[in-house]
Length: 200
Image (cartoon, rainbow, N blue to C red; front, side):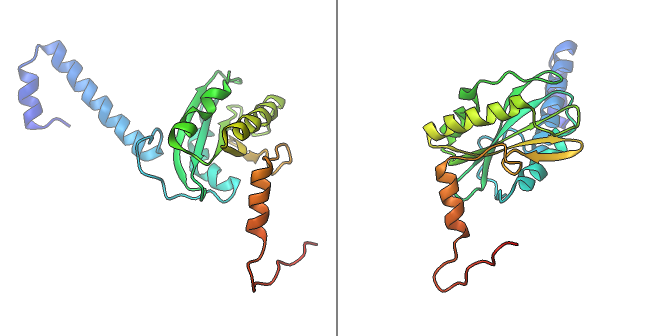
């Protein structure tokens, strides 16, 4: 949409420049709409009030958008100490079935934003979210890097049209000792509270 002030400004420009300016403004408007709709690239925005409690939360947050992509993407969901989402970073976009990933890039934004933990999320354009051996290797290596940096890799979630798979839930990834200790203490009953029922 062009305002009256924009119309006056456009009339002072040569026709080619006016057309280009109009296209740039329209593209910016469309990009702002996409950012609002998909919450991609909200690096400078305040913390999102979404809390990640399980892999399905991340799949719900990004899965609808990522499952339909024609190219493989890896995104890193940045979390604070209470597992609230503080940002999402697009790290890599690859070809039809592969992505070249540098682990330093996976943690760069997490370090800059002071994230306590991260969740890797990537899609399989084939639609099948079954993790590949490369996915498992990347996750294991990233977990080690995260431990060295003091940023916990909580999980790696693969999304596709057929659903999502958590490497942690499948037993293909176990986070470092800090995560295991934190999870165990969260599961312990507080003083005066009965213990949880035994499984089975």
